[in-house]
Length: 380
Image (cartoon, rainbow, N blue to C red; front, top):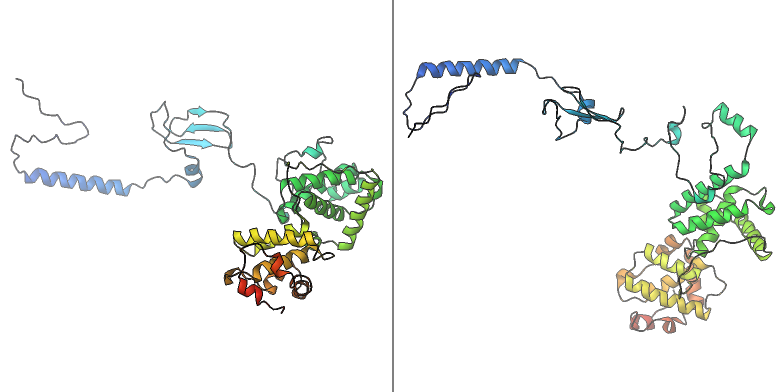
């Protein structure tokens, strides 16, 4: 049996692996030389400063990617400007014409548009602007060319339509209204600007009226006072345009958009929608909200609060459902309900005392409320 040859040292100067069968003899001279050599090597390595890679290059480095040409000798850079993937060692272009997955540009504020517009793309095409395509050219904001373009004019109807649809989307998202309300209001606004009866009317007032009608038709009613405060318009001007819209509809001069409704749906009144909304904002429990719907339905069927504003009816229903609850955590005061509904405390208290206090026991659902508290309740 042949004996295995001892491993030979390499040219790099590394020592051979020791054989466990042989006894090693101590050699102090060799050990001291090796220690001095390692110390010199470490000092020389520490004296040589390492080249730091710049930050903008480190950000472009692709992790866990090796060059097939130099076998991982250098780093791989993903250059988004040129759309190439390049090896820093041999310069090989691994990929060309890369698709950048980053955003088109950063978001610019209104006060950051002193110079030319840095945005290179526009918004998605709206289905109401397919006829014109919304291909109008705008020249900056507040510049001399912009003022000249406004003075010359152009297609005023298409620019008014596109600006109105953008405003409708912005206000509806701010009010928390769904997409159906935006589409309904946009279609109604497109019909109104083509009528001669609406010439000379302010666009913001027409937009507020369209959103008010659309929210009511899509079962997402909002109080007129709340909408006017959000749009910054007067309620009387909105009422005038609302009356003109109904006149055009009765004369068959205006076609209202169609709302797709499911079969078997029960149409809620505006007061019921307001009452449910106020209950959610007051963080009432699910059981309280379910019984509140029954109470508001009975009040509307009997007509106990006929002639009152829907917001007043909804706030009064919420107070009745809360004041008779057995749990103190579910009770709400006039002040809390007034802050949510924007109806004065005096109005809510008068509606409850004059119209609902005497009928409180007949309005309660079965098994709801504290019977003792309901019987001993006083009209404060």
